[in-house]
Image 1: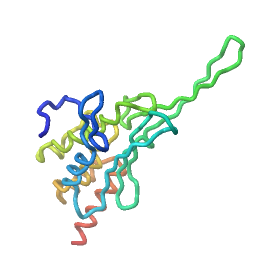
Image 2: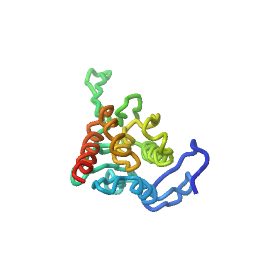
Image 3: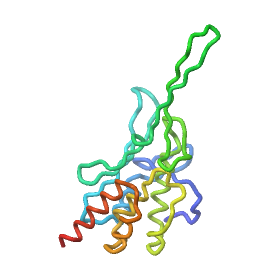
Image 4: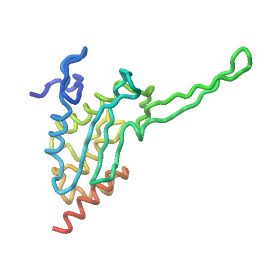
Length: 192
């Protein structure tokens, strides 16, 4: 049963393990709900995996990606990690160089140190918000917490958006990956 409080945080993991934050929801259940909305005529994949940063470390960052066929169209955090170098002067006039990495949202204004912690559940929360959006609101809804433009890709692949609306979506979409999905769907419509 879905939570009636849209502001409540949900945390997703591979197997729905319990943590200090409470029971986490299984990624596979969220993924299945997404696939129920996707046009079955395209080979759209939304994946989420965790991996260790270093051997024997506790860091388990999550890697999300969207692919169409064998082509990866969107990848988190790969597309969003920016590296910065800062140089500090010391008392002995020898500079110290510090290399830092940050995850920066594609829409700007969202920046945090890498490896990240909160983006994992935030991306899943945006996906959940997309799934819960009624069909009549879907086409025009702005997802305020989508700093990664994942909803553009979901909307482009969503079977609830038909051929005519898909053409309108292509005209107003600036996301290149979403345009690839839209063009693939329109090509399938033209063949049938």
